[in-house]
Image (cartoon, rainbow over all chains, first blue to last red; front, side):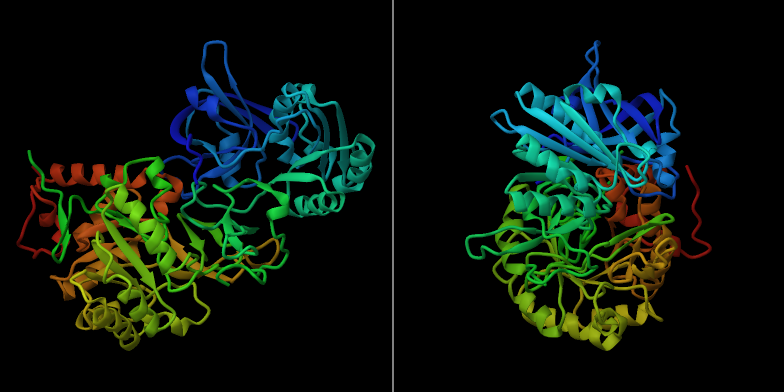
Length: 286
Length: 316
C-alpha cells in the first residue's frame, strides 16, 4: 500500500549547498515533514514544464525537521549522476519544485535499546543519520560503517555523526579509512560489539553481501533497496524485485514486489537476491 | 455557459472523456491517494490475464527523450484474484470501471470473457491484443487482421452480455485501418488507439541493451504524433466507431489534438508517472479549451479536424 501520508506539493528550495561530491538540498514542505520517517523517500519533477525528462527523480530523505518559524523541512543529498539530478543540483534557493513526499516504507525502530549497526554505501549513508538520531533517543548504541569508492564520495557530515557511537570508513582505493569494502570490516565490528540489528542502504550488491553475513550470524537486517523506478507511487510496476511473501496456501510464495511502496526498506532475509537479468526460479506466475 | 462534457461508448455513458490508460494506473488504489477516482470518466485497469504472471526481469524501464521504454510483461495476479479483490474495491469507490484483458491464446480471451458474465458494475471491456512485451512477435494478435479478428470474435462469442468491447491496437503495423476494420467486423464496439511502439535503448557504458529483455514499449509525448495520425486515419475510414485515444497526452492541448483527430475519449498513461494528478489537470484544461473555442458539447469537437474545407471555423 502507498504511504498514506504521501502528498504532492509545490515546494520552495530553502538551501542548496555543495558537500564534497554531493549537494545537500533543503525543501520547505509545511506539515509533510511531520510524517517523514527515516528510510522514506521523496520524488521531484525535473527539467521544468517543457522538459523532455518526463519522469520524476527519487531521493532518500536525509532528514526531516521543523524550523523555528514552524516551517517543515525535508533534506536530501543529491549526487549529480545524470541530467535530471544535475538539473536539480543547479537550482537556486527560492525556486520551487514539484515534490511528492513522504513515499515508501521506513526503517523499523526496536522497542527496546539495542546495539545497532548502520551500514551505508556512498551517499546511501544519507537516511542512516536521522535513523541514528531516533535510535539514540530509544537508548540504542549506534555503530556506523560507511564505504565508498574514494574519500570524496563518503557522505558523513559533522552534524550527522552526533548520534553515532563509532564510525568506520572504508574506501576501495584506500584514500580514507580501511582499504576495501564495508563487508571486509563488518564481521569484526559485529563480533566485538555484540551487534543485534543491522540497517543498510546502498548498492544492491553491497546489500546482498551484508545479508549473507547477517544470516550466517543470525542477526536481523533491514535494508533500503534500489531499483530503477518511473513513478514512485506504485502504478508503473518497473521497480520490482523478488520477495518472499508466504500465504496460507503457499508458504514458499515469491512475488515480484514494488520497491516504491513495499520498499525501499525491506527485511533483507525476505529478498531473493538475484544477479541474472532473469526472473529467478520459483517466482509466482513465472 | 453549460458545456456538456459527457461522452459514450455505444450505450455506456461517461460524465467526462478522460480515462486512465491500462497498465498506467494499476487498479486505481494508489491514485486514489491523490484524487477521487470518480473525478475521471473511467479507470482502465492494468491488463489482466488468466493466470498469475510474474512479468519480466528488471531493468524494466529506460527513460528516453520525451518518453520511456517499459518492459513489464503484464505482471499481475490473474483474473480470479483480480475479480475477487480489485473490482469490489473499485466499485466501493464509485469508480466507473473498464477492465483490460490480455491473453496468450485465442482460448485465453474466451476464458477471460466468460468470467465477466456475472460481474456487475463494469462499463466496458478493453481487449488488449497488442502488448509488445511478449516473447514471440507472432503473439501480438493486433499485428495481423486475421488473428486480431479471431481474438475479438472469441470475446464476442463468450461475453454473453451487452458489455461494450474495445479492441486495443498497435501502431506497429503497415495498415492500422485494415486491422481496425477487421476487429470491428469481428464484433468490437470501439477501439483503443494506440498501444506502445516497440523500441530499444543500448547503454553505451555497458554496451548492451539497457532492458533485461532487450526491447520495450515506447510511450510518452515522443509517440503523440503517431497516435494523432493513427486516430485520424481510423476515424476517417470509420467515423461512427468510438475511439479511446491515447499516446503521450500530458496536457489539455494534447488531449484536444487527439479529440480533433477523432477520439471520443482520452486515456492518460505515462503522464501519470511524472505527475499523479496529470489526468485531473488534463480534464480541466481540455474542458476550458473546448469552451474557449465556442463548443457547447464535447461531442461537437470529436473529429472536428476532419471537416470539409468550406466548413470554416471562426474563433469568437
